Image (cartoon, rainbow, N blue to C red; front, top):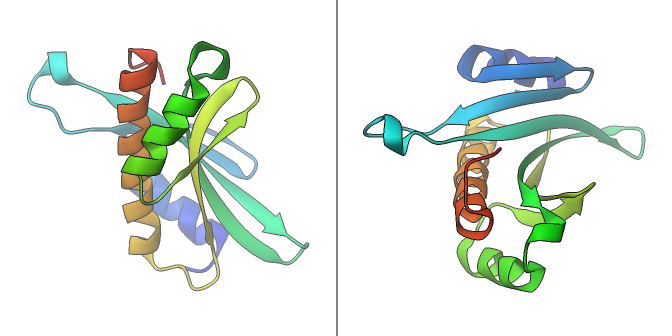
Length: 135
């Protein structure tokens, strides 16, 4: 998989796309659960980025909560101890977890595995630090 069109076609076929606009897809990543009370999901934003007007990348991001409502030092410390495939940023008013990958020569597992790790980590951080499942 080496193009944005290839990646978006794959995402549309495998995930629940809830919004598509330009070079951005939003999916609802749903986790397996035992019953309705355990049901959780996470919004994940997939965006095409172009660096230096020639290098295509894909950024995977997921909001966790409002930055104003959290102890950022505690949140960043937890992310530093518990994550492998993402970093944290404040984008607008929200704390997001994100990961970026070059599109050229991208293998599907290089996208799917970080996507699942990021969604799971964002969901855990959201529950732990923001007390809910709002995103």
